[in-house]
Amino acid sequence: MPSTSRASGAIPSARDTIDHEFNRLDGSTIDVPFMQIWCDQQIACYDGFKVLKLPYKTMDVDRSSPDFDWMQLKSIPRFSMCVFLPDAHDGLQSLIEKMTSSPKFLHNHLSSMFVPVNEFRLPRFKLTFGGSIAEDLKSLGLILPFDPLTASVSEITEVDDTIDGQIYVSDVIHKAVVDVNEEGCEAAAATESVDDMGSSLDYEKPKQVDFIADHQFAFFIIEETSGSVVFAGHVLDPSRE
Image (cartoon, rainbow, N blue to C red; front, side, top):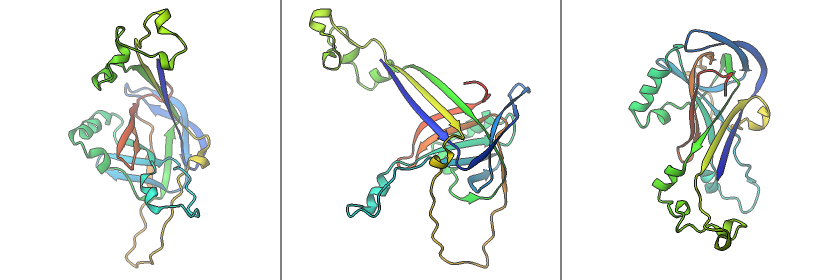
């Protein structure tokens, strides 16, 4: 029984794609397509690493409808891809150790403020991974479909197991695909509204930030309403799936 999920991330406002060197962990380099962005992005800078947050487009809601309820906005899923980029080319392992040291590390280091971008490069990448999840389902209590003696799946198949023998689930294979590229970037760009509450003489415009992901990094796809991590992975060589 196969199961497939796909996350296609389009980079908001990506305009130009250029080939550039990506530094592998073994010290070698490879030319891969890099997406470039010239507008402000949600980037947070910390000691030893930076975090980029790319929101996915949310569900369209008709706010002019008489049935519209502002409370329903809180329940709409909001997905974002968050890229954790270490400063050092070989810094991913130590960054992962920091992440695993605290259960709140990931959510405490997400960016919420837009900053001006000086130089921005993020490689296209596509990751495909999968395998059996039968044991995981059994550990959650889903036992009967896997038992040849007690399973009954005749209601979801066209095979009559009373004639052709007992039908049961021998395995469940799940495949996940994460595809990040610049296609459809306008459709995937998040719409942000800013309320102007006046100006302040003490306001200091954020400094320009570079975000050049030309070496290994980790990424997470997060549902922000619930805080759930939907996908987690790392990119060591964007030329390989």
